[in-house]
Length: 158
Image (cartoon, rainbow, N blue to C red; front, side, top):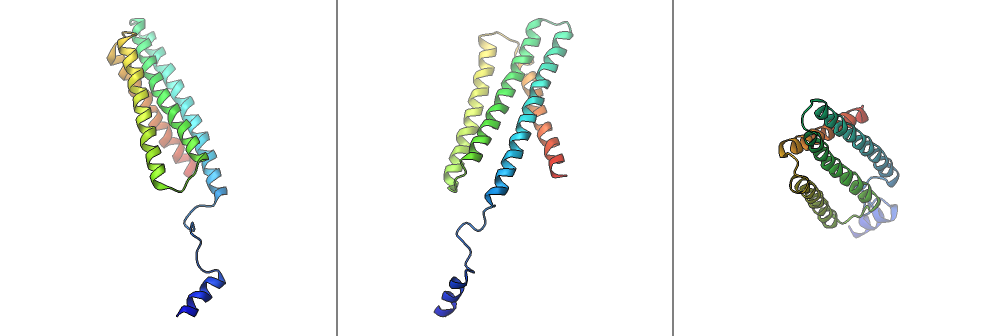
């Protein structure tokens, strides 16, 4: 029995410790493709934010309404930019420790949440922008981010 185990180990049939991992070359290609998609999504978010603010301004309402839509969209763009930046950084630091990756995931999510809350709070309190337009701009650009992600991932797989 012991001879069978040593024969298998001598022949190299024992899988290495990280056999379930993807090859590094494949992971780098995926990371580069994800970075490209993230940049495209960010550009789309900026365009949607500017377009919606332009539409709000063109409706001949108060200029503060258009500014609120733009600031809400800007908070959403900041959220998307943080997401893209953290995803790119985590791809560079590929560690194998699951607990560390989970801690980073929670930290990055909390960071993005706090940035959005602070930006929206500053817009409402300091700039005195209408909350409905502010949140409307934020939701519109967030929806555009989700739609762009789904759309671009659909064509990436095809």
